[in-house]
Image (cartoon, rainbow, N blue to C red; front, side, top):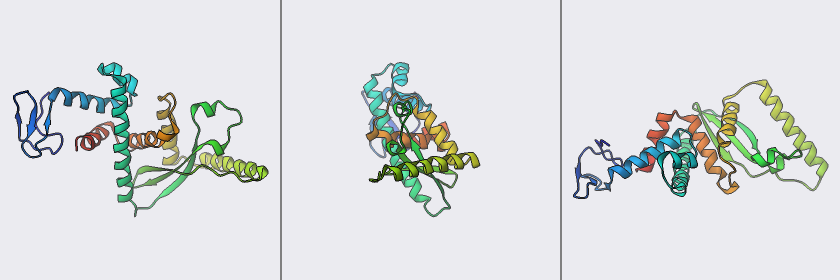
Length: 217
């Protein structure tokens, strides 16, 4: 691997240590070219939309190691997107709510919106941003709950049939993107949602550049 600059500070002045590691003259960080190459390959495979198991097999790595890397990437991405959202806070915004059901819930005939993961999507500056909302709260009156749920379903169908918004396109992309994961823990769903948001908003080469800058910072 040829390296012309430090992956952390991008300084071009590097020197080689006795153990073959490289050291940056500016930030003084040391790194192995072999390890660095492997780190970059994992990032590139993540951005190519391969799951952790596929990446572990392709790169001959331990699955748990890759899985932990992937979760770290998602957390870095979540922070990055949060900062980007607030940086665009003054721009015009459109928004839509979406109710996500897990694969298991979709198999249930009598699934309810009250059991769904409630997401709100915002479209601003030609980018999609998402927030997780609290689940819908049931009242003590089942009839009112049923009427309200029917209204939400009707409103969702009417909106979907009326026009194809960027947010509708994103939610379809998100559903497809999440299918490759065989079950997502609800506690971690937020990070998988942010992964979908990141991959929808940026081209692969942009994803790689952004993630490398976040990871090697």
